[in-house]
Image (tube, rainbow, N blue to C red):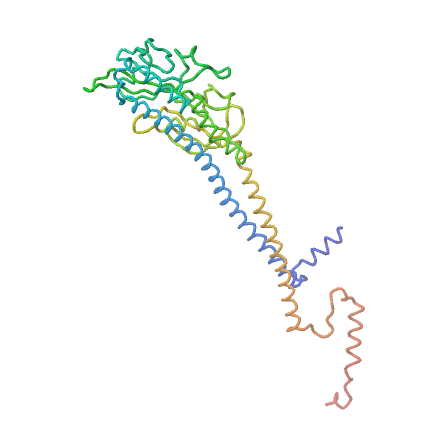
Length: 377
């Protein structure tokens, strides 16, 4: 092995290495360096772009759900504003049967209405869907107090008066969202409030409607947090937990984006986030939508992209080396054709003392000896 290494080093020395060998080595090293540098630059640029695209996709999903939540609340609030303008709404007791039928039809067309009712100016319920809470005072409820002043959308809360009247699905408490609007008489005086309670299943159906199409090709988790950072919608194990992660903090500040972060379970996630912004008729409730994906799964396309880039780089390097070898051989052949070896030159393997002596004798015999006359002159 030592003799082999010594012979190899001796062959690579400048005084003994042939032109073809040096050309091959030079082109090979240059090809490896160029392909390696270009592959590294392409990998970094493609990785950054792909990472940005993955984050934008998660951010776009969160913004889509946030917009759906805002739009849904806007439509329900417009329902209350339209009902407040209907003839007969200023005399609910007189039109009791008509209003109950109308409220029942609304619940039939939109089952997420858990309750719809009309109060007088003092906050006593006069007419309600299925007669629930009729005669009960709701004067201390936030939706009535705010609804007397202007159209109102209230944050999610557990049912109070309706807790024992409405069925509960599963073992979770009944959660409601309030919408209300004032009722005015012909002179613009507030004479009552019409309000409705939306079941939180409405928001869950929006979440599932956005989540289900993604699960087949892009498995993600969607959570909604309130203005306090508490999870109000999402996987059961995260419900009611307060989160202190960058995505939640960003959403609560009213910004949107995507961030790589570590969650309280110790796992790393790429999370897209977006806040709800409300509409021109109501302010945002301060919710933030989070769409998270396990970092390893999110960046799997990046690992595959890197593998493909380096496989292509290896193939390109081999092609350059092959081209360099062929070019070196061609140059060596042209050199031999234009600059033939001197008489008596032989390969390195045959340059021994015996061969050199034989060549000298052959040259001596083949050349005629000078005659005496010539030598005298």
